[in-house]
Image (cartoon, rainbow, N blue to C red; front, side):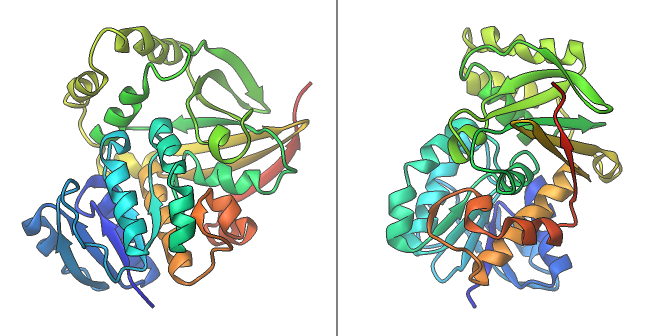
Length: 321
């Protein structure tokens, strides 16, 4: 069995992907640009070695690899070279992004992935993997998803990605939503549902009113400055969350299709992202994918089996009128 290679392994999310593979007792390789940091991380019990290559000169770093699990972002800047190199090497692919612009570009690699026999499953973090799996349990059709994140502390990388998406699409206007005890002000964000589930599907982030309008305000600002520079300037003011802060957060995802909804709940946004992506990568090297191409995990894998393996609580309900 060819190994998993975690690319960007020494970053914040990359280390959590490595920790998840260690918990699975899954052998793996690590890769990135910082040789000293890779050497130190390669001492982990199930790590079988490391490979050094920057994202703009990947060369043959993925040769002989069964699946590339990449955490290098923002993906709008650095994602496509990694995906292209994985397909060229015949390696399956998993990433942790939630960036719509990258996901749209990734879909353009679908035919190349099919020709190479590669299953590429982008967006396997908490924003989209539970939604992709949940959507597979509904009848075909549009899905609306609403994501609550409680006590969430973003990393610098998340801020770069999120701010970099500001200005993409129409400016969102907050609207009040409630599902049982879950309520708040939802703003529509560019999401993976419209690309991988149904064109009329929509993603929403549910916030307090002042938070929602604050995020909305980024749209006109982003039209006046360079998005990348703006994102970098804001990210520089952010301190990555401590382990205590990270594990204390919680997230809830409510999905609505027609008059039905389901609720998925978990905790530790970044730790769960590492756990989800590692589980998907493990299934790919085990040959669990049903088809090749750039797809959602809900289409390429057994959604119910993966939800069960991730121990995600699923509660069904009927949407309010």
